Amino acid sequence: MRKSAADRFRHLFNRSLVFVRNQNQQYHHPSPLRSLSSMASDSPFPVTAQNINPQVLKCQYAVRGEIVTLAQNLQKALQANPDAHSFDEIIYCNIGNPQSLGQQPITFFREVLALCDYPALLDKSETQGLFSADSIERAWQIVDQIPGRATGAYSHSQGIQGLRDTIAAGIEERDGFPCNANDIFLTDGASPAVHMMMQLLIRSEKDGILCPIPQYPLYSASITLHGGHLVPYYLDEATGWGLEISELKKQLEDAKSKGISVRALAVINPGNPTGQVLAEDNQRAIVEFCKQEGLVLLADEVYQENVYVPEKKFHSFKKVSRSMGYGDNDICLVSFQSVSKGYHGECGKRGGYMEVTGFSPDVREQIYKVASVNLCSNITGQILASLIMSPPKVGDESYESFMAERGAILSSLTTRAKALEEALNKLEGVTCNKAEGAMYLFPRIRLPEKAIKAAEAEKSAPDAFYCKRLLNATGIVVVPGSGFGQVPGTWHFRCTILPQEDRIPAIVTRLTEFHQKFMDEFRD
Image (cartoon, rainbow, N blue to C red):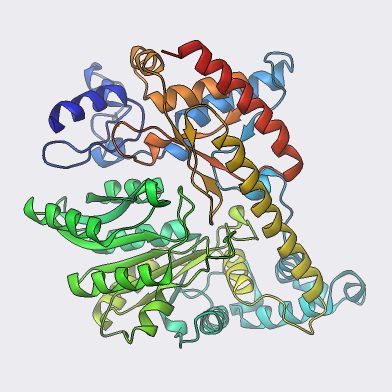
């Protein structure tokens, strides 16, 4: 039964990232380039799709996949002829990229960056009237910490020492437990840090990483690229995307029975694409599970500032594990943070860090060696990472304006999440769990059988078929759930909550009208 289901899904999901359990409970993600294997082997090029690393062919990243390519082509068509379609713009709701959708950067952060990049301004009298006093003072502090006082120079491979000190102090203030700056590795966003850990942990296809399903495709892509095995654990949609320890144990034992050595557990909190925020007692159970099973806990915490419901609060896994009495000798924990999310949304600045605790000195030496191969992360991103962990404080000139900007962004995100959630739940055959945190909604669509058959005729996943039709009719870009993984036979899409608040009503209208017409066309 499972095998035939897997065969059916492989056929349906050509050109889509999808994870389907077969008889051996393994995941397969067909390459959109597999048809190239039938091409003639007498290519004039020395490098072909047949002789490159096969892991690259297997790797998929749906967030910037086929749907986005179609959107970009539509955008070019609109630029050439504004009347080419019934809509006049493409609205990219496919990726957590706040500033591309109109979010303004935080003033204090940008003032400090400007002064650090052009420190000659610090000596000019006019600067006092153009920049806040605390941004000038912070810029002086940072510039003095940078080797050669130049943001264009390489830094220490882990990042500038003074900036790591600042980040460590911020983590201590957040968690109430000590943090060592030597545990901080500054990276170009959280993604390279995830790749570094996969590179460290995965030795062969027999090494597995427990990952949530649905998951952010960075994890499936990096596991594939490094030749490992994704071991899925399903989040429970019926309980608001709950993470059950019984499911972790089940999937761990199943992997072991197939000869897979599970090395780590990846947890995304708040969740992407699902938006849930873990309760502290659930986190304690997860820490205990990793402790007992000897697993590295990979804690993706890049949305820690994005919590929208009063009954939930973010707790770092570092804080939870330390509150349980576990220290460096008890559990291996890697926490990821980024400047791209939160209220700051500085995606293009590519800043982030990982805090690495619980590893032996010889392994830490190897992590440092891998970091050294990349020389260092970019200095602008390093500075921003220090700023988000040490923003203006009470008494600073920028404090009130900073808090106003931060509060307005987070309040608006809360409003947008609720508006989109309510709109989606009004659509025929659509259910959407509450967005407790992060930047996304992941509604389930119950598609008519006629729509599923139409998708099959086009050799497309049913949810990808829906998303393409939505794009062509409205210009709205969302990502099919098959790009994140989902329970076989269910269909979803991921939509960001990031379009500006005044744009939400128009998006809701477009989506509602499209969905009604789609259901009328394919209703059984």
